[in-house]
Length: 288
Image (cartoon, rainbow, N blue to C red; front, top):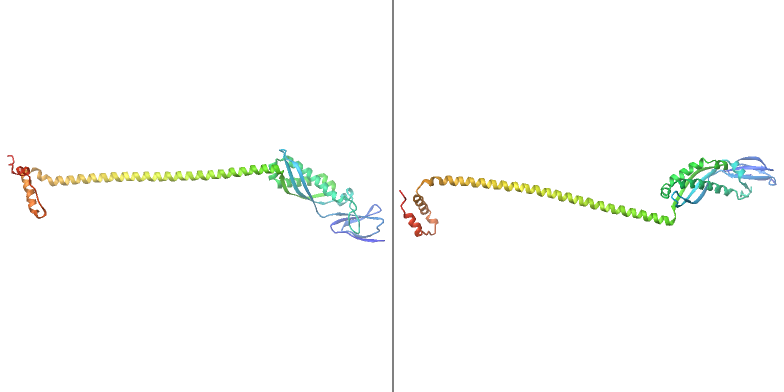
């Protein structure tokens, strides 16, 4: 009984009749005789191969690498010659377990290349340079003849996680936490040092201000003292000028003038006492 097969546009279909290729192409459709026909369908769309590797770094530390490799079949005829991609035409189910093995082979090649890259770097560099690791792995895979011989092309390599073992992770966390604490302590020390320095500058400014004030006060005191001395000298000179005429007068005359002044201001004087000594002094005759 003749049957009809309609291929998917994303698959390269090959019709084998009695062991020979009768027709092939993408999304091929045809009538066929089931007893003498075999149908091979090789997918052309991209596929993803997930991977999780446990590798050793340059400083002999275990690192877990998790990611995904995206690939596509570039040469379907070559792939079909290496793996069995025959399908049941009606259900389009594969008749062998070969198709999933292609992803396994791609994963093995990815691990081979990535192992070389990981072993060149230390644990810390692997943890920090995940993007560089993925890019270098992709570049090397795209140049590998092994992939060309498989008829496969690598489209992308991405890493979702690069992490150490739990024990090493705890140690790294402890070191990082200690570094953060030291950094925080240093920041506190720096702030205190700046505060002390600012306080010292404030005290120096205050001291400089006090010194300037004291110097101004010293100048002011000196100026006041000089002014007072000048005033005293001027007053002494004025008093001397006033008393100069009396220096050549007879003392009795000066005394008489004093009593005369007292008499003129008697209303302002409440009482006056003349002692015998004063009276005898007044009665003395001046020497000739």
